[in-house]
Image 1 (tube, rainbow, N blue to C red):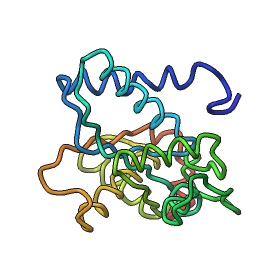
Image 2: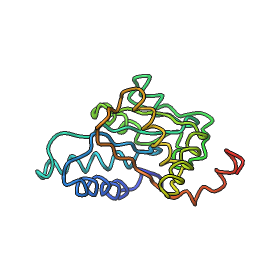
Image 3: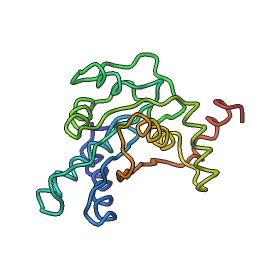
Length: 192
């Protein structure tokens, strides 16, 4: 079943928010960068933050949430830029980051609401930059991240350059998979 058409996936993704809060000693970060195809991770974390506040575990402050998408499939970015409450289907969607290849997300209105409420945003990254940064992270950190996670590292640089993320802010980037699942992308995009 697809994202948000089954009852338990959001509940599972909610654990991202709980684990994040616990690992950061119940002080949420200033910014979260999340690779958003269907958006269940963003939606689940936001639900977790609401629940934790109701339980008295955290205060009312929330991180600024940023949905990171591929330039070849960026319906949330387009909708946010156009001021829409829903995201029209992204025609001819293409990207090596299969987790971001979601031309019409069922929860688009939920993602857009969260991005507005959190004073966050959405940003698109091209495939070549994803692969380049994945290689850079691999060589510097020894981590073979997926293109979706690499897109978040690219987004961080772009958002820092435009002043949307200030120096000293606490930022969490989610890497949602292993680069080993995408070996063909490294050959297709950059020739090996």
